[in-house]
Amino acid sequence: MSTLSRREAGKRMMAGSLGLLCASRVTRWVAAQRIDSVVRGVQIGAQSYSFRDRPLAACVEAYQTVGLGECELWQGHVEPDERQMGREAMRHWRLTTPLSHFRNIRRQFDDAGILLYAYNYSFRRDYTDPEIEQGFKMAQALGVKYLTASANLSVIPRVDAYAQKYQVTVGCHGHDQTSNPDEFSTAETFERALKGASPYIGINLDIGHFVAANGDPVEFIRRYHHRIVTLHIKDRKKNHGPNVPFGQGDTPIAAVLRLLRDQHWKIPANIEYEYGEPGMDTVAEVRKCYAYCRQALEG
Image 1 (cartoon, rainbow, N blue to C red):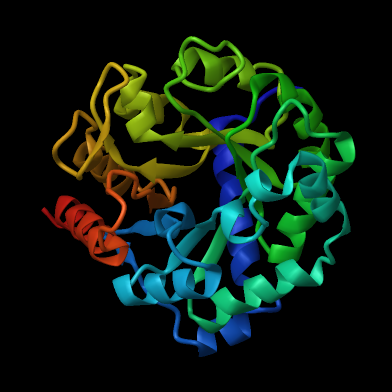
Image 2: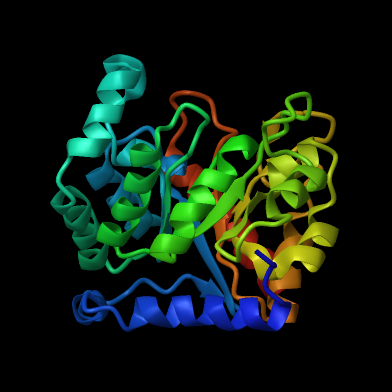
């Protein structure tokens, strides 16, 4: 299928956002006094992986403590640990867990005044078709119109078929694994996935990993903003360098955020805290990341 024009994509993404606001759950969400973390028109939130050191309920509390009002939910906060249960047991869990489990999770975010914007469900080569489809059913139960996925390129055509069926957009997430042609990393890998895909295949650009793969996130966002579902905000060094505190690496965080601000592109900028050592105060570090983003946008 042909890709969306920028105007058509913008209209559809706006419709998706308005659809969230028109959902039946919104009355409770507004009553819960939604946390406002929009800064100069830019929605700042977090990938809940940032709070991977705590279970879901404590993660929700951390969002409230930091003052972040938008969440991209990491599947590790929803599913059991596959390393402990094994691959087949995980597949069975996904296919048999009642969708009420996911509706109850959405309710926790609504009650906390946090917009649940996207769910991270990372499609891999070994996912069966029923397992792929189940991710879209989970998205519907969670009340989100976006999935993000650290997916293999080779699985995207199968994912696209279900994305069209359920009308849920998938944002493909990259790392800096440039030596593996089946992983998202460089601009070329994203372009390969988008070529011939439906408008329901998009991008979840991690600007830190993109820089580590020696990409220019500012230039890439200018070219593909109409296909970007969310951004992950982190700081890394070039040439596969490490994660570092915001402002200490090569990632142009401030330039990216100001680009969103100045162009009025409604793309959530989700902090993904990864630089810390075990035992560090996660909430305190995410608060520092948020302060850095606010200063960049207000400056």
